[in-house]
Length: 382
Ligand code: MN
Image (tube, rainbow, N blue to C red; front, side):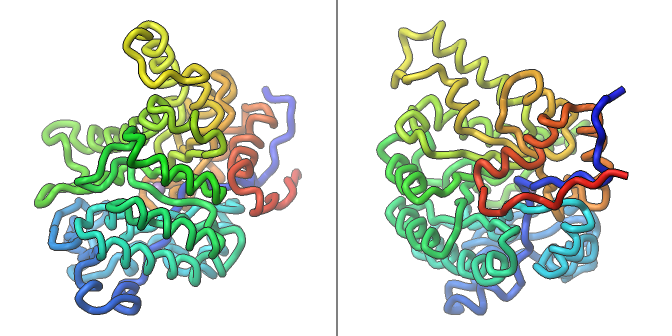
C-alpha cells in the first residue's frame, strides 16, 4: 500500500516518438533525379517495400494495408496525429504526454544511402521539413536532425546549420552507413562529437536503425520458431553497442558535456553493460586502451540516457540500480508504443513507486536534456 497520493492523470515527457513525413516531401524539396532515389515506402498486404538509392528491401508490416496505400494513410488511421502537428497535440493532451522527442519515419532509412551528395541533400530536406512543420508547431515537439554521415565534414556543417535553426538533438543510426568507420574510431568521429557538444545538441540513437543490406528483409535475423520475438528483441542491441563504443573509445571522456540518448531500447541494459564494462576495464586492464579518467559505468550513468515504454524492470534501473537517466517514452504512433493505453501503462509502472522516482523518469530526466519544453500541467488529485 503506497502512502503517497497518485495523480489521476500522470503527465510524462516522451523520449521516443515519430512523425510520418508526407509522401511528397522529397519531390517538393529536391530535383527529380535526387528525389527519386530517396527512401520511399509502398505498402502491400502484410508487408512493405522500401526503396532507397537503388536498394530495395521488404519489411513485414504490423497490420495488413490495402495495396498501394501510403505510409501516411496507414499510420494515421490508427494514430490521428502521426503526420499532423495539430492532431498530434490533441493526442498528446489526451494521452498525458507533455513534450516529446520526435524521430523520422521514412527518413530513418536515409542511413542506407550510399552516395554522399544524395545523403547530404536528403537530410537537409528532412531537416528543413522538420523545422517548418514540427518545430514551429509547438515548443513541446523536439525534432531530431538527420545528418549525412558518409562524410563527417558534411555532418558537421549540417550540425552548425540546424543548431542555428533551433534543433536540440541529432538522430544517428545505431551503426554508421556502410563504408564509414565504426563509432569507436576516434579520428573519424571526434570532430562530430565536438560539434554536437559545442552546439549543445543531444546525440540521439534510436534502436533498430542499422543501415540495411541490399535485398535482405530488414529486421529479420532469425527465422523459424520464435522469430518474431527473437527479431524484436535483437533490435535492442545496436543501441547498447553504440553506447559501449562511445564510452570505451573515450569519446564521452573527451566530451564531458556530450549527452547521449538511446531511444526505445529499455533501461536495465544500462546497469548491466556498465557492470560488464567495469569488469573488463579492471580485470583486462593490461590490454585496455585508451585509459579512461573514470570507470566506464560512470560515464554511462552520467552522460547516457535511455527511454523505455512498457519494460517492467526499467523503473528499478533508476530506483534500485542508481541510474538516474532513465526516462519514459511513448513510441507514438508505433505498434510497440503506448498510444491508446498510455495512462494505463504509466499507472502500472508508477503507482507503487516513490514520487521522486516517478517524477524523475516521467519528467526530470527528459528535462535535463531539453529544459526549454517547460513543466507539464500540475498534478490533479480527486
Ligand atoms: Mn521509436
